[in-house]
Image 1: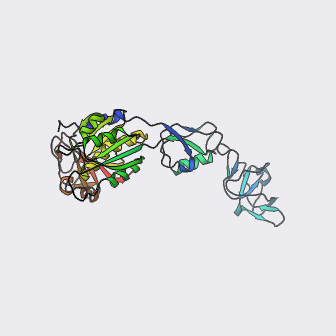
Image 2: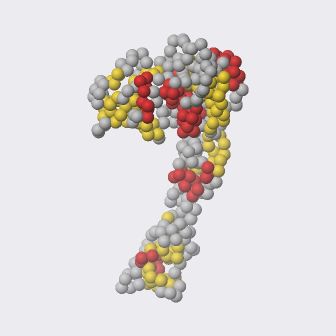
Image 3: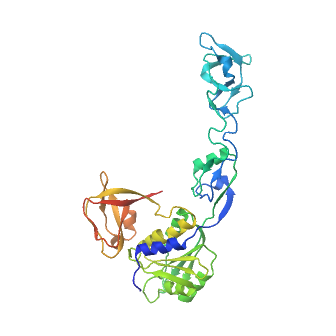
Length: 377
């Protein structure tokens, strides 16, 4: 295996390779979680006219002057519900508790109101042409609610990245169970990708190469066959299919990850077969490509915070290492057994992790470190 590349060099390659995808117009009810390609402006004032801010009776405010519990004023009964447009000739709303219907199409008002009281004015939410939602915003329920108020039915969003997953089968005879495919499928969907195909392929150079060339996906993930063993042909197949830019990263777990692209420019990420290595090569490289393609935040999709080490964190010099942590009292964290010792259990039993850089041997007790918590953003 060639000399290992730094994590920073691998990430730089990802960022230089993964461009933005094109747009598509979709119906607003299906837009939650999608990323806008351009800002959305108000086609008119919101609301489009003066409307009641609460349930009550629409009145002309000047007609209520002098009203009190000792001097109720009789006015026409024009009932309105919150959100109703004010009828012509009215400019305020009397709350239900300040008026008493008299049973003869009138009300008795016991407190005067001023013009505009309990009224949402035309354009109060947004004036015509105002930016409702900026470009590259990932749409949530609140955005969709505002766009609905604006009378919009469709929006322009970034197309979902199409992902093809190739799982290389071991060459040794016997029962084989895929331990990585479902894990990676779930991660792809979390990052906004759409699985176009997930197939198992024979672990030989010719078969893998053919599967890489014959793709219309936006990114291809190859799981397994990335190491230096005699039956590990993924890297050679990628070199045949286009370009093997990086093979081997100073990352633990994830040393045998590879990065490249097909002759047609489609990014290809080689994910190691060991589950923990597969997970972290996905998170740091493949997931980053998918998130960038879909114009999402490229960084790890976990919340981070500054915390204090309760015990020393030990790492190997010359390797970037993902170290699992458990939260203690206050803002403290303590290390757990490594991925090398317990595999994926190190992620499942941890509250988060710290990334120890290649040039460090770890952190002493009492150090302030950036901890990524397993709470997806």
